[in-house]
Image (tube, rainbow, N blue to C red; front, side):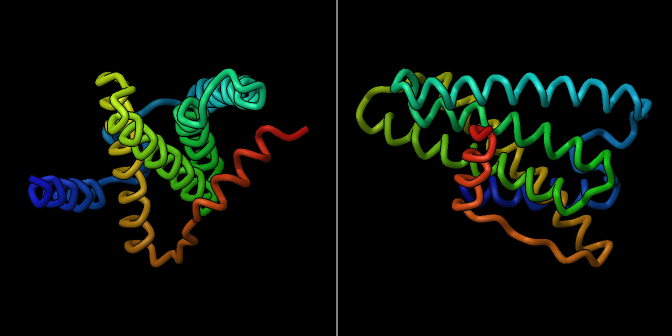
Length: 170
């Protein structure tokens, strides 16, 4: 089963790399750039406000790290999409990786809760789906970078912690 999933991901990343110019969107559908920027800016700002509130609630002990991670992925994905539209490939890739790392850590946290019997199936499904979505985007970036001979910088879990601190900062 795992091998099958890996094969599907490989096929998807290969076929998408051949036609994609933007790792986040369907290349066959055109949307005007100004509208895209406006919508994505609003999305990013709303996701940032949600993440800031969640970080504040975590400091008060009212939510868990899992909740923070679940809010971080959508914020970083919006950041990535805006950086892409700005033409900043490296920043866009870094933000996509941060989204992927947040989703991966959310899945790990959910699995830990599952082992204790304290989780919801829907929560696990959402986290696994989000992680897969972000993984596919990162694979698309890597394929584009390979095609265009761009060297990419990988981010670490420490970078995710720093990025979360900077969102929570002044």
